Amino acid sequence: MKDIFNLSDKVVVLTGGLGQIGLNYIGALLSKKAKVVVLDVKSEREAENILKNKFLLKQRDNILYCLTDITKKIEINKTKKIIISRYNKIDVLINNAAMVPKVDKDKFIQSNSVTFEDLDVKLWNKEFEINLTAMMMCCQEFGSIMKSGSSIINISSIYGVVAPDQGIYQEGFIKPATYGVTKAGVINLTKYLATYWGKKNIRVNSVVLGGVYANQDTFFLKRYADKTPLGRMANPDEFNGIIVYLSSDASSYATGSVFTIDGGWTAW
Image (tube, rainbow, N blue to C red; front, side, top):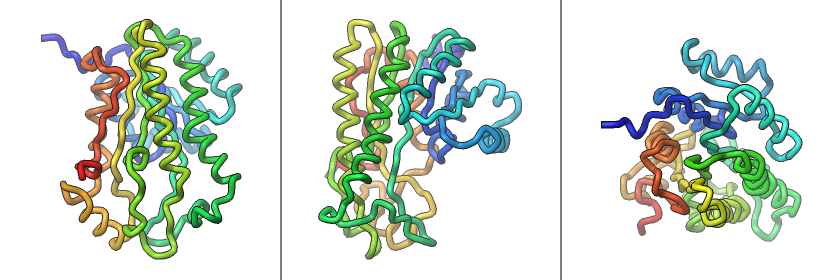
């Protein structure tokens, strides 16, 4: 039987690839023999250290790192030319990069943690620029040269489907409106492009992710678990399966779909 999950010779472009989840995606894609083009804003030296430490040298040969600020279309275009020069095609685009207001167990990261009434429009616009506008431009630049059978995967969030429960966070941290609004926009952009590029047989799907273990405080972890049917957050590698599926020929009839991987969070 043909291995429909095999990604041999497929060229996969991954934005935000040097984060916790992005690095897991790279490992999963490499395990299926894909060539992975990683886009991020870390320096070449920092990226090289991260990739060398994470992946074997043999695997590293199948990774191309491109320092790219995806909020600037000119940089996306420059990166596209580099990819085409090296591989002459793009088979899969995974739009993973995002600005996510977080809080960890040691300190609050509160650049966006303000009440709705006090939310600065500059922060609102910045998050839209990174989470939605940059994704749109990546779809424009990379999607425009993708051929029949290609796949675009847009990463959304449970907060693009439901509103945040502010009660699960410690006092002093507020999950802002902007993140959820942009992630809801990701889902609609996905549906738009699925219908727009359907006749070209370019598949466009969205993945709604639940929360991931990432050094959060015990207060938050307990309350998040209580709201989740599986009783816990996700491990960083538990989204790898859906990424491989949507990157491969196994998903050849899937487009315009929203795949929710959240431990049941949005089921009630």
